Image (cartoon, rainbow, N blue to C red; front, side, top):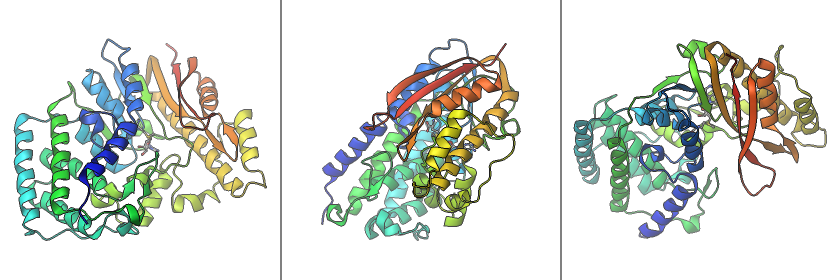
Length: 412
Ligand SMILES: C[S@@+](CC[C@H](N)C(=O)[O-])C[C@H]1O[C@@H](n2cnc3c(N)ncnc32)[C@H](O)[C@@H]1O
């Protein structure tokens, strides 16, 4: 059956508007919610003089990109190599010649994909891959990926731009339904088999969007580094005037799980074991091996203790709560990791530097975890001054879930 392109575009527009009504490079991959970009832009706009800005939890490089557009020096770190690659591609500067040659390469790729004269890449080892893509889409994507490999130079800016377009096409061609912050799969009844021409047009449109964004170069490039935010002095050089970040929330969201289609197709993940290991090293991760390891996790010495945190942990661990103990361990490990992160920040803070953490609270078994208050208490015990907490927005229909800007100043 023919795909209803108009309907597909409407679905995509819905998702785009809800989570990523961003244009240019902020919208290259639909991962960063529009409000998040707005908050970061608003915070960054408060500083007229160029600042040295750090975002220890890069994600899709919102902070580094905003800093680069505003002429600040932006440095950002992430533990996920895919996001580091994406952050570099987003914050890079692209010449007119690069953009023109990418347009030409794209036309060649479409041509060889259409004529079916290229050997498709192997199907990536994504569990239950047929839930993601029907046979026709999968075959198209495998040829498209092979075309990108054969027609562009390894590690060239053209290759990066084409791969960003490919990542967009992956989701555009998928059966994933983005009807909430996480994702689900459309049911058989909603599925339509796409024509090659529809898939080609989708990729061409994705590339147009990416190349239009690439034309709008930031004043500076960002510095995007692979590393663990619990060991910052080993990852970044010098000191910073401003820290703006949105750390992982204590809400059991796994970034590896969410990003796995891109990561497998681009070769950043090769198997489920590595995915679980990466999730375990990420703060707040609970996917695969990470969940089973939480059962045996023991609090390290020198951990941050606070009556509010302890009271929440014992309520969550209550024996009437199925999995209560493992979830209490999840929360305890989350704060233990954040504590380690905040401690590793101290040696790289300039005198009088300011920090903004955009954090969300959570609930477990109806127990409200006041994440923002625990961040405030941690900052206070580390010696920060002028600690403030400002509610920014309600997160969803649950009335108690909010996002906060927890800010503070490091003493002069
Ligand atoms: C909430 S997201 C950041 C969102 C980001 N502000 C954006 O605009 O996309 C949190 C990020 O922290 C990263 N992360 C988790 N643990 C980390 C660690 N130990 N060191 C560095 N990054 C980590 C995750 O990979 C994820 O990209």
